[in-house]
Length: 154
Image 1: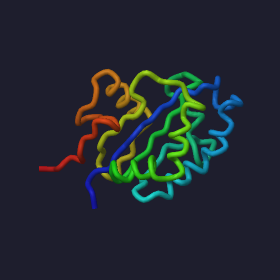
Image 2 (image 1 turned 30 degrees about the vertical axis):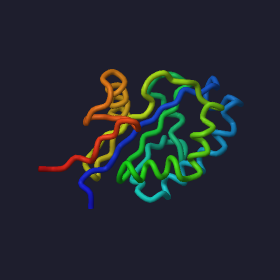
Image 3 (image 1 turned 45 degrees about the vertical axis):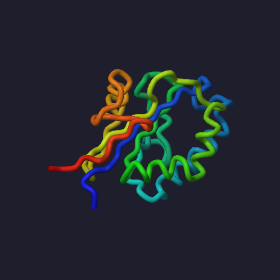
Image 4 (image 1 turned 180 degrees about the vertical axis):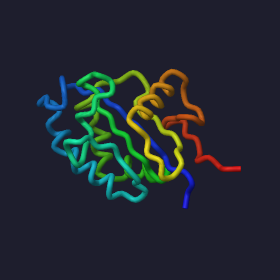
């Protein structure tokens, strides 16, 4: 069993004024299905959820911006996360993201290694993304283009 898991945060800025905007309807209508699929995927460990819904975190607003939604999750590896992202029904929503989301202009996904069994806080995830946006990828936090391998304990 691995000593580390992969934590990730991704954020998106909606085209709608908030999650209830009609432009977001199809995305919202499928959110529970996509999130449930994540939870049933091989390598899934944990996902941030709000207190009001069993499948999403859309009411959480760490950026104080009603147009930004976040997702924080933990996976056994980069490979299991990428399989979910690119080889399942989720990939359809990635392909269509321009229908619902604006170009963000900054890093919108950050990943980092955590000890297995640890769960990141929303605040920690936001700090990691902020660090990546300011400093670029490193062993501390990285993105999908510049990945760093799981740490090897000495």
